[in-house]
Structure formats: structure tokens, C-alpha cells
Length: 509
Image 1 (cartoon, rainbow, N blue to C red):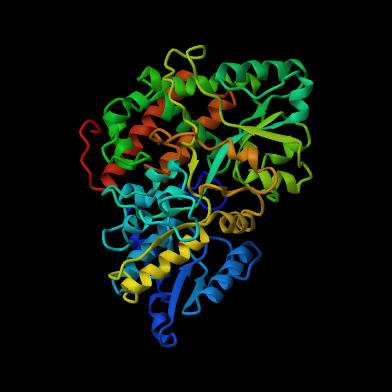
Image 2 (image 1 turned 45 degrees about the vertical axis):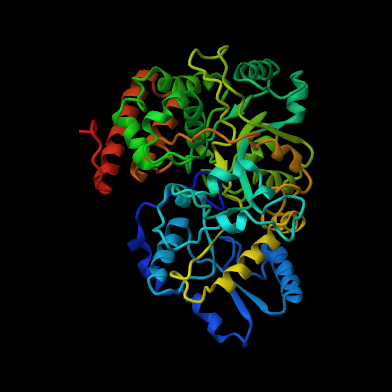
């Protein structure tokens, strides 16, 4: 599962897996048709709740429930019925979306993510083009000329399908960063956070000299730290190669793009810029704590068997730094660590560290707008109750929910603290959120270069890659041995992807 950004929700790319969810669809109550039973003149909006939050009455949805009731009071001709999502991944949810669409029985508002929309994986005619509505003024946020301009501009490329249509609303972001102990930094005489990779190495040397283990790289479990490293380093070091391999022209490279990169000799350690990704990881081994394979950066703090959450290592002062997600903020606070941690983005590569540095800032290439408030609106073809009048009502309701004050309030419940970073101008985070806000890119991030570790090719390839990284980071494998086995795994996964998807890519033979 392409879910290595965090425990909830996960970015998952559709891979034509409609049949995988057919058995599940039979147990799903059809939502679209319930409007036919509404009182005369009343519009009933059927909407899917954020995933894994429970029913609308759950603690995580109390803000949504509150604002829904307020909306209904001020719009007496509109009723909103929220439906809990039973699907564990966006892949299965979209398989059900496609299946229900054949009978015109989809809900009005559906959970969606930028991966499927960005890659064009959803068949045309199922989710609506929101461009005309986004280009109009938002009645609940009149500070901006259009509804679109109320969103952070870094959001725009992720909201678009390949045909240029805006097809998904993305209200919040998840990000990753290096969490650090303020006390450990102070003890080592470190007065600020590093802005470059060279400064980061210098700080690790200071920490080690002061008797503090600088960092743990969690290589176990879901491949979170390894895949984050692969994506971030690939997205900056390989930026000059993107135009050559980005055949699908999406914000995040697709399986076809990655397979093309393998075939064209870009995604191989025979390419010095690509090899540098892994050589740099190897250069950090002297500063890593041992036992990283026993920890998973995406495990919950309550996990009791390996791979464990590494958060307790920071709380107990065992290490000075960990690489975690924005959802770690409230989790660390819940462990009594409030005010004792800080966070910064993985520092930028410069020529002082590697001759292959490109100057491309990779902030934002891990994570992205996959927090809560990810919704699309279905078309009349997919939802036979969706009249033009109803579409306008649905849009109005989403405009209401994404206005700054309301979004700030209900996101705080969803993430149980500053886990999801709002992407609407003027929306704020609860306590501790300002540090997390710094993890967002200042400008549109570069194309995210995927690879072996994030299931974009095959799950088996990702598992093999994870084992190789684990052995390499633990010092049990030389770079030459790692490189040879890594290249073999990449090629095998690319060939399997091409075969499974009936795509011919010259050079993979």
C-alpha cells in the first residue's frame, strides 16, 4: 500500500484495482439515491466523512458535526447526511466509486486524494470539474477574489487532473520533518536549526562529541523513513532528469514514469547523481543510533511489539533527533513533551556537500495535501440525484466548511491537535502549530520523483528495497553490494509493472 506518509490518511495511487473492491461494494449502502426520500423542496447532501474517523458523532468529527448543524439551521432547505467510510485505502474507495457510478448511485461528496486525480486514474465523467465554481467568489471568505484564491497556491497543482480541470478540494497538508530535543541541542551548544545539509552534519558531530546520540533512522515497518529519504533526495538530485522521464506529466511521478526512468538509465546507481542519493545516506551512518530496524516512523506510540514508534526515544533523551510526520506534534505533546521539541525540514543540499547538488528545494515532496478535507463532487452521470441546483448547494456547503475559522476548528478535532496543516489562507493551527507550518514549502514544490520504496511499481519491489536499505543503514552491506542488488530490484519491479499494466517500455527487456 502506498501509505508511507503516515498512519492516517495515506496517499495511495490507483493501479486499476477495480475488481479488488467488488466484493466489498456489495456491503455498502447506496448513498446517492436517498435524496429521493427527502421532503418536498429539500436537498439532501450525502457526504463521506474523512477516513478512519468513525461516525459523525465521534470525537474526531465533533467539529464537522457542529458546523453541519449550524449550516442546516441557516440553510433550512438543505440536509447533510454524513457516511462513514469503510474502505481502508483510497484504492478501494475509488474502485467502489467507479462501480457505483455505473448505476448512478455514488454519494454527492466523496473522499478523494491528489494521487488518483493527479495521475488521471479515475475515468472521465465521474467526478465534477470544479473550475467554474473555484473561479467565483467564496460567499464565506470574501477577503479573496475567488474560492480558488482562498487556498494556498502550493495546493493548485495537486487539485488538477491531467486535462487541466480542478477536480478535488484539498484543505490540509501532512508533512515530515526532523524533530529534535531542545535540551539536547542546548547541551551541544547548537543555537539554531540547520539550513543546509553541511550544517546538519556539523550539528550531528557536535551532538556526538557532547555524548548524545544524534539520530535514529527508523528503517523497520512501513518503509516510512527510507521512502521519505528516497523521495526527497531523488526529487532534488534528479530534478534535471525529470523532463526526460515524466511521460504522464503529473505532480508526482507515476509507475509509468518510474519504469521509464529505469529503462532510460536515470533511476540506476550507474547514474552518478542517483548513486549519490544512497551514498549520502551511507555518510550519515556514523551518527545513527543502532537498532533502527526495530522502529517505524509511522507506528503509533501505543504499539507494543516491533516495529515500535521511535517517539519515546526522543522523549526519554535517548536520541537528539528523529524523522517524523506532522501528526507527531500532538502525539509528543500527549506524552508530556509539550514545549520540549522543535522541528525543521530536511536541510537543503548544496555544493558544499555534493557536486550533484541542483539547488532545487525538495520541501513539500514528501507528504503534500493529504490531510483531512479531501473531497470531490460527483457528476450527474455518477450520481443521478445530482441536479445543477444540487451541485450548487454541495459547492456552497464545501465553501462553508473550508472558510478559515471553521476549517481551523474542525481540523483541530480531526488531527487531535496540530497534525493537519491548513491550506486555506487565514486558517490557524492550535498550540505548537507554528513549527509545523514551517514544514510547508514557500512555493510550488518540484515534481516528486518516486522510486522503489513506495509501492509505485510493485509491493514486492518495495519490500525488497526496504530490506536492502535496512541492511545498508545497519552497516551490514557495502555500497557496491547494495547498488548491485538495488539496481536488480529496480529493474525487476519496473518489468513487473510494465507486464501487469500491459505497457511496452523500450529498454526494459
